[in-house]
Length: 122
Ligand code: HEC
Picture 1: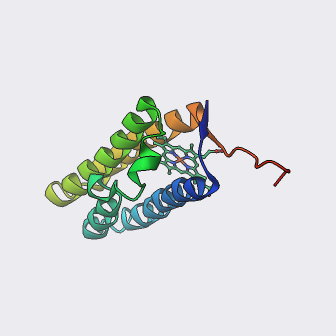
Picture 2: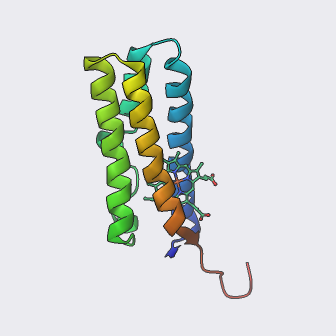
């Protein structure tokens, strides 16, 4: 399914995606060291508190299923942060990361961004 967005909106969404990946790198590097403080701090930057980077007029264009999957990923980061702090168990966190990656893949399996071409070809 195509998400019809402006070029600027596409950049915002892709920027958020690259942040997801960067945070996953930080988490993956911290886990073997059992550095659960860094795991929690990194996960928190992508938690539901950070979900407001996309302006509301862009959010309004997004289908409900997209918003639900995006919300589920942010909630997963919240849970990863909380459990990293309270349980301090790298294996538990790895399981949660795997489960969350399923949500990334679920959304990628459904949506692509389409930016309408401007008249006159551009
Ligand atoms: C709610 C839907 C959704 C979720 C959830 C989601 N993505 Fe994406 N992601 C997209 C869309 C849409 C694109 C653009 C795909 C396209 O147009 O080809 C994208 C693109 C990307 C890209 C490419 C960025 C670029 O610069 O081209 C990366 C990397 C990425 N996602 C990582 C992730 C990771 C990691 C997660 C999970 C933590 C995730 N995404 C969760 C929808 C989602």
